[in-house]
Image (spheres, rainbow, N blue to C red):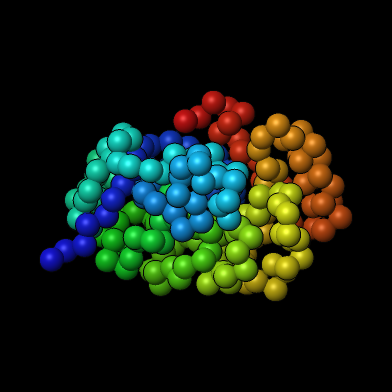
Length: 212
């Protein structure tokens, strides 16, 4: 029996942050996370208690349960009908690696997609993923130590960027923590990157531009 994937939502947008910012992408948001239930009553005790994403249920646009071929086709249906621009899907969550596997990545590849993931790094990634963005949270249990970009929300208590300096990523990015202290956190992020040039500032441009 083929595996079934539970999806919160699928939609075409512009990637708003990280090294792929500005690129058209189909976002495929998987349900569930291993660092927070998604319930407000559990937020204070969660490992990641600043999450602003709704990853519970399957009630978003194009949400539902899919086989690998059907999910790949649902994503392909949203990509513009053009010969220009490499089709690009971002597998996100919640935590996509609770569900994403080699078979699903293969199904995306069969439809011409470059496959990216946004993950907290606590689970191993399929070997055939094209772009790995790790956004670590304070667990210390990171299975991923190599990838394309490490994007650290800053500042986080107990999460000194220096602890990641030996990880093997192509790009290291600091992203100011959103919320009531965003302006102050942005200044801290800029100052840190100026003093530690290994790191680059990553802004959530979709929030400034009003991109969904």
